[in-house]
Length: 138
Image 1 (tube, rainbow, N blue to C red):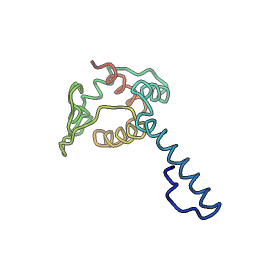
Image 2: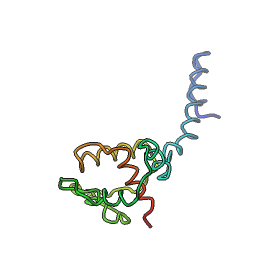
Image 3: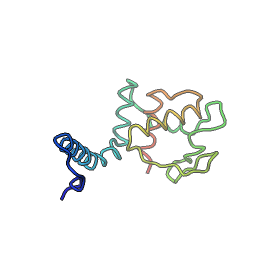
Image 4: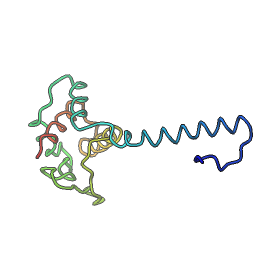
């Protein structure tokens, strides 16, 4: 008995639909872990370093991470300095995850957080420097 065998058959269209649904369900089950971890911090560092066209600097990343850039907040305002313990959002108090394992989330949070700290998006070089700093923390 399969997942879809309890439904009554209504000709070839029903058989095709069941086949498509079974294939989709199998694909989702097999692919789901890939969606949850499609990158690593090292891959993110490499991506931004290549995009920036210059080597990343952990020293520049540390300075950038801790600087307020003319505003109220620095990266460290929420992520702690050094960011080796769980950070909390300065306004909401929500815990901040430390994983850099999903490209879409990494891009979303860099875009959002850079706009909060800098009032603009970070450059690829700034992201590479921050990542170089973060991956070198113990």
